[in-house]
Length: 190
Image (cartoon, rainbow, N blue to C red; front, side, top):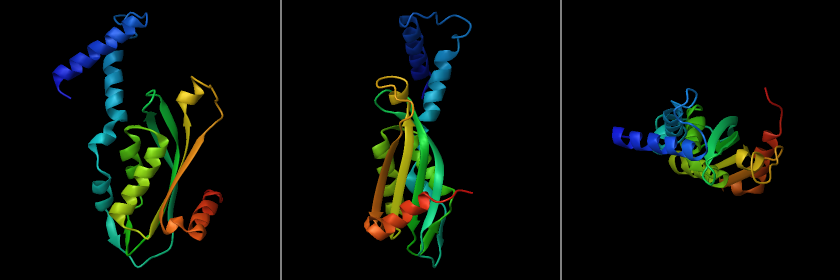
């Protein structure tokens, strides 16, 4: 973002604070507009990243065709409807087709899509489709569990609810593979 755009956005946040009944020149709020802008730039930095680049940076030839699961990947995102956070965990499984990816790349792919204005349903599908397209496994399954502050703090104000979404591609659409993945998610943690 160029300097002119930054100044414009900082001015907009100052005006918003004033319209809300605050004094943007008081000590505690003086730097708030700039901090909010920097925060939003970080929270939406996924627009500047590519899942393809992340995944293709660590592909390895391996003769392995059993399920690989990385579960309990923390995720933080912003709801595109209210720009309030939602947060939770993502679980990813895939069955390799002659190639595996470095395990750390799967959480990075989650971040690529979570650090955008999102809805959980799209986020789940984007992660699954990116892995399926760029890794070309026999199948991929993604499950996301998240709590949404737009439901907890406002609106229906239900603090104990959470949302689960899933996307199953390739052999994960077969009941046996899907059930194996889902049963392993319910298993013990380390």
